[in-house]
Structure formats: C-alpha cells, structure tokens
Length: 601
Image (cartoon, rainbow, N blue to C red):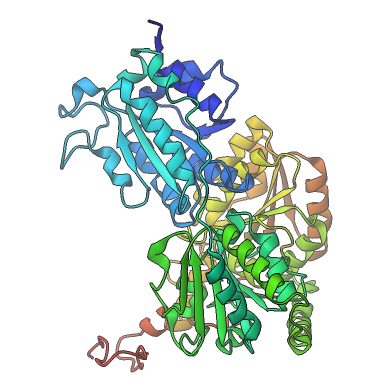
C-alpha cells in the first residue's frame, strides 16, 4: 500500500486535469497545500485580496474561451467572505470556476476555533456560497476528496457553466492517504456530449426564420462561451437576418458585419430597440433575457412578445419561458443548436434568403449613428469626452485585442458604440455588475492570453476600490494596460441622482468643494508599474500606443467629462425614483389587472 500526503496528491490531480494557473491568497488553513504546490508545474498567482483572485480566475477562464475553469484558492473566514463577490459575479455570467477553500480543523468542528463562523450551525461557513455556486461541498474525510474534486471539475463545465466550492479542513491536507483513492479518479475525465437539437425542430426553426418578414437573431453570452459565433454568423449571412445582441453577447458577430445591428435594452440605441420591436420572429440563443437587455421587460420599449414569436434556446431549462411567452423552446447547447439550424437552412434553402432592404437600412442607420457622435469622438476638449477615449482606443487596439470593462461608461459606452470584432474579446461584469471587476479580471485575461493586447477600461471609482492588482502585475510582469476614465465621481449613479433629484449627494469625489482624485499614475509607479498622466486630448492616443508597445504593465490616468451615456431604452428604476410630494405615474404591466403599489402623499 502506497501512501502520500493529501496535499501532494491533490496537486497531482490538478496537474492531471490540465490546471496551469491557480489564483489566490495564503492563510494558515492552506499552508499545507501551498507546500505541495511550491514544486508543481502549476503557477500560483498570488494576489493581495481574495476578490481580486476571484475576478482574475474569472478573467482567466474567459481568456481560455470558458473551456477550462478558473481555479481559486482561498483561506476560510475573511478569505472565503472576501471572495464571495467575485465568485457570485462569475456565477451570474456562467463562468466555470473551482474554488478550493481551507477550513477549520475537522477535530474542532463546533468548538468555534479561530476564524470559524458558526452562528447557526457547526462547520457551516461554506454554506454562504450556496446561493451562487452550482454545488458546495465540505470534505469530512480524506478518502472522499478525490471523488469530490472529480465531481467539482465536471460540474463546473457541464450544463450551464459556473463556480463550485470545495471546502477542505486544513488537517486533511496534512493527512496521509492511500494513493489508490486519487488513482481511481485522476483520469476519470470522460468526454460528455452536449445536448443537441433534433432535426425536426431544427427544420421548423429554419422555416420560421426564413419565411418571416422581419426575423432577428439574438445571441447572449452562451453563444460565445460555447464557441458558436461562427455558426451564428453563417446562419445570419445565409438567411440575411439582422443580429441584435445582449451586453454579454457582444462579439458573437463582428460589429463590422453587414448584419450586425447592436446591443438592445436600456443602453441600446433607438434603432436597435425599434428593430427588435418590429420583429415577427426572434430567435434568442444563450441568454436569460435579463432586465437591462430587455428594458425591464416593458412592452413597447425593446420587445413586443407576443405578437413577436419567440424561439428561445438555452442550456438551462429554467430560462425557457421565464420572462416571455415562448413559441418554441429548446434546452440544448448553443453551438449544437446553431449548427443544426444552419444545416437545416442550407438544406431547405440552398440559395439562401435575400433581404437587401434590410441590409441597406442597417448600413445607413449605423453610419448615421456614428456620424451623430463623430464630433464627440474627435473633440479636443479636456477633460476628454468619453467618446474620444473609446474612438482613440479602437484605432490603436488590434482587432483581436481584449477590452476588459468595469461598470459605467467603460461598460455601457463600449457596449453601445465600441466595435468588437472577435468573440470573447469583450470581457465585462454583466450579471452582478460589480464595480472593481475590471482591474482584476484583466490580470486573468492577460495570463490566459499572453500574446494578446489587453486594455482595462476602468472608472476612477472602480480603480479606487482596489489598486492592488498593480502589485500582482508588477511582481508577475502581467502586461495589462489600465485606462482610468477619471471623472472624479461614481459617474453613472451621479447622473441618475441628478436626473431625478437635482443633486449629486454622496456620488462625487470632492475636497473643499473641488473635484478630488488620487494620482493613479503615481500610485502605479509606487507599485512598480509604468504610470502616465494625460494632460490633453491629443496626448491620449500616443500615450496609449506607447503603453501597448512597452509590453509591460502600465496605468494611464485620463480626466474625463462626467457625461451620461445616451440611452433610448427603459429601466424601471427611472419610474420608481420620486421626490417627496412628486406626482409620477407608474407603468402598469400589460397583463396586470390590479394597479401596482403607489406611494401616498
């Protein structure tokens, strides 16, 4: 009988599963695992805060096309709690992740040892992850760990991808275990076929799309993560169907494709939303049809379903019919579904379908939209117009370069007006919309794609929340370029507050009544990365070109006007906000018979 410490056998298991990077932070509960990891081929990327590690693991998986899970290592107590935001963000965006957490010694369960949280049940801290992970395990015996790890990696990638948690008492890392338990699981990695679409349903959908007068395709992030972008583009081209998309679906079709229209919803343009509303058939693929993309699901804003007939394809059966009446629902993988529908369309309509007027209208409207913002894109004003920042970046960034966004202009503005050409190269916090996501996720993207240019567009609020990704970048030489779009405010919230209440209390960064900001370039230099402070609009583009050419971590601090993103969609919060004594009508859902709650004066 051969034995070895569990920690060393776990590292061997991770190596066999193809793990190349682990993002995390030390703690007394994981020192035994770090001892084994020290001599491994797996590279441990140490960060200064567990939320950074979670976002970096998320970005790493996205950089790998979501084909492998990001792996996160964290300590118990504050470590596990600190990571919750990043893990929840990954969950809502369907990003595969395996979280390995140290736990209190198994012999001390219930005695309230150091850093254990057990106010409601003994040894139960791992349960705080239950609302947002696919499965949370606490391993009570060493011989069960191989089975749990085997299940964890498989579950994170199958069905709707997402994070899983494995909580391991620290004494288990240091136990000796017969190697046969891990040997039984180390190569138990079967190929799992993904659910496809039957031929009859594929043909029915192809006919609906081809025969419709105003069909649209509507991809979400599931199209990108499943590798279905090429099939989507081919189907759109063969049947000449306009393609609208969700925020997470941006990049599913190149934005310079003649049939690419743009993003819908609150931050969509008027033409995009009108195109969606006039559709008689809509095929949504790999999306949960979320609130922001659907203008809070109000009729007459983005979608009119019905009379629009909805075809909804998603890997998660719970999404089908959740928010809209569905004509055809299919629970299957986006790539398998689009491949089957494309094959049916080519079989039934070998010459394809031509809609020249639609193609012409898309081209004219897109040209008119960019003409409408051309002045702002070329403006020499300083603080800069955000449109100028995005336009200059698009000119400098290679076609396959990555843009990692945070929240605010750097997400909503990019979704609306920044062309993305390659699937997966736009990385944003869509589900939880976490401020502070971008600075850390960019680390993981660059580690996953060392040969690609990676630019993180971050507001000063998001960058100020945690600047320590600079430290990891300096130590590991991770060549991210952070562009801090600095408007001395939580800009989006300041705009909403000013719109409804005519003040910006609690949303501006001020000192003695004047705009205040730390010097992010100096902070970067203090951490050991190259820092730039842009002092005029004309300086920005050359500085950005220089930073990308250096191939080292850099931060560019550029002052920006606090200008709201122009929107023509709807978000129900704008109906909810009201001042004391203000009379304001409430919207009523079309199917409601009872007037909704109303504030009494």
